[in-house]
Image (cartoon, rainbow, N blue to C red; front, side):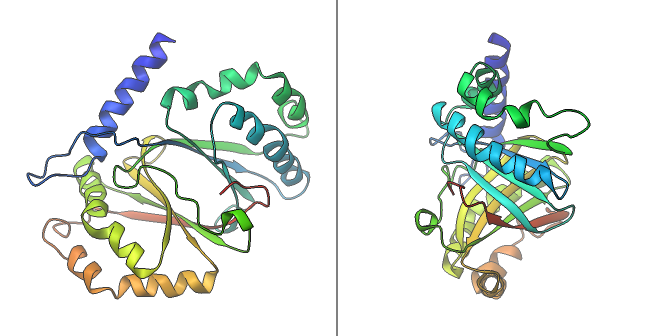
Length: 267
């Protein structure tokens, strides 16, 4: 337990130093601002029984059990456009890093979770529940410290999400890109009509340093229209060509997937 607390403290200190918006001097401001932590989990599946089994596990076992730990709202998204489908993404937020880090241990002792999820958790080797699971741990950007589910979430109409990851070639460039969001990019997204769901700086994961964020739309056509408005925005053109951010390629790879929410998703 003490080792876990030490690791949590170290991660928080590093994230606050790298991720906080820069002040007038260009130095990061160290203020947690009530920021959430996110685990983003990706289940890689095969078409067929794995899809049904995983959805039943997430709906009937994992989401209720996470709720008992205070982890909510939990987003569950099916990959609509992207490589290696089918994939299911699960977004788990908490204001406590300790809660996220200890969740698996606590779930192991949750009899209701174990019973409801038994078919998934105890799937035999010859008929596994999934191909692989990938996970990353993030901290929310200081300027967008909490998940903001789209206003339509409660009614569950048709809606589309985009998950984007930006990789940078160095820690300095990554810090500049995070700063860029805080120094105008947030506002440009909103002015263009986007609905930002979350912005996260990766603490543990692959292909670091990187950041990930999620946007919501009413449809794919709406998404294309908004990106067009974003790209032609005078404010974006000014920000993206400023000497502070255009001195080199501060983002060297962008990956994105288009997602649709599961019927039981809380986001």
